[in-house]
Length: 211
Image (cartoon, rainbow, N blue to C red; front, side, top):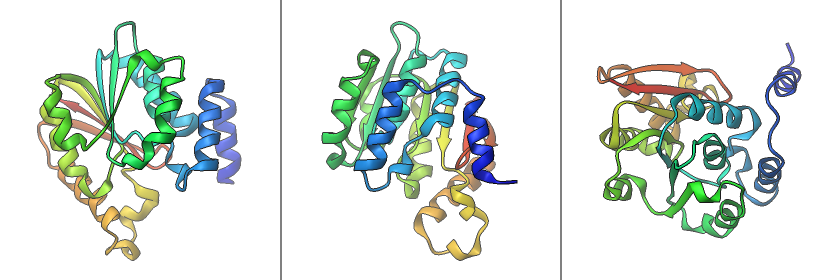
C-alpha cells in the first residue's frame, strides 16, 4: 500500500483544516528549518477533538514551535478556556507570536518564552490537560512536571513517542533524542499512577490519564 495515497485518503475523509491554520502550516514549512515538526492537518484535527472530548478549562503545552498545535487546541476550547504554551527557544518568538496574536483564537492562548519544567509550576495553576511536544531528551522530566500540575482524572498527550520508528531501530542507539523518547516510553510503561495508550498516528501519540 502506498503511504502517500493512504495519507491523502485520510485527509480527504476528515474535517477540513481551517484556512488560517493551513496558511500557518505553509508558512512554517517555508520559513522554518524543521517545518515538519508542526502538527499538521490530521494531528491538528485530532487535538481539537480531544479538547472537545475532555473539555478542559486550563491546558498546558510544552513546545509551541510555530503555534499550530496550540491554535488547534484553542479552537476546540469552550468559552473561558485558556492554553498556556511554553517555548524554550526564544529565537522562535518573532515568527510565532504574530501568528498566535493574529489568529481567531488569540484570546484563548497565553504564549510564554521560557523553560516549562521550571516556569509552568510557578503559574500556580492546576491543569486539566497537558500536551508535551518539547525537547525529546528531557521528556521524562517534562512528564513528571506535567503530572505534578495535572488534576486527578486529567490527561497528558505526548507527541513523537514512536520517533519515526527509531525507538526500535538499533541504528539510533546513540542518538540522544531517540534515547530520550525510549527512556520516556519505558518510564511510562512502569508508571502505575496513570493509564496510557500509544496511538500510531503520524509520529506516535501517547494518551495518558492520571488516576
